[in-house]
Amino acid sequence: MFLVTGATGGLGRRIVRRLREQEIPVKAFVRLTSHYRELEDKGAEILIGDLRQVRDIERACQGVKYVISAHGSGRSPQDLDYRANIDLIDAAKANGVEHFVFISVLGADRGYEDAPAFKAKRAVEKYLQASGLNYTILRPAGFASNLLGLAETFRQTGIYVLIGDPKSRTSIVSTDDLAKIAIDSVTVPGAKNQVLAVGGADILQRQDIPRIFGRLFNREPIIINPPLVAFDGIRSAIGFLQPQTQKALGTLRTLLANEFFCTPGEVAQLEEMFDMKLESLDSFLRRYVGI
Image (cartoon, rainbow, N blue to C red; front, side, top):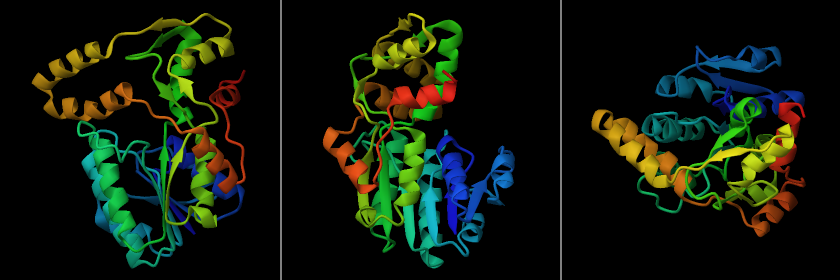
């Protein structure tokens, strides 16, 4: 039995789907207000709860062999990225869970002081490594599924807003590939007690993304490229009225200001370890936008 948190998110939903396609039992931890009907129809056991409540986490971990922590923080990195994962690790250990898979972020170990989500995930990584549980920590460079909304906007307008350096490098992973890797991590010997960078098949420049959109929809992209200093100005202005929002935007600024990509060697290691060929961003988008 697997437990998947964040089961209605872009990654979690794919993990649950893949498990059910293999007829593997899974508990899907969901919020009451989330859209979980599809997962229920596929045969997942639905566990409605709140990750900020220890009793809900303890109930979720009962009778579970593997845990995949795939939930995001939204605006509450301290509550969800950190505290919920610490409680989840403790409950997993208390219930004899055999393997814990944690979805972190590429660059969590770089010491970005202005990024609350990065700091929280790094603290969880350290706690998990010291917990005594078998673990796999996955550090994705970015989810391809996060670009689907931008692709639809581009389809309608041809406009793509690119803040900061357009030549900054990234290697966005197919969210379907990441789901497979997360599941297989509990049985692949080489993944046990490892921290793995996870990227896509190609190292891209950020300006390549609207160009891929342009090819998909057969239209010339209109790229709006405000400098990072413009973002900083807006963030500072927000800070006068909403200090917490200003702090939360530090994670976004970190993502905009730095490069997040996997080396060819890291990609080759993943492909060999998990016996797969990583999908390109172009291929992922073609499958999902119906081109």
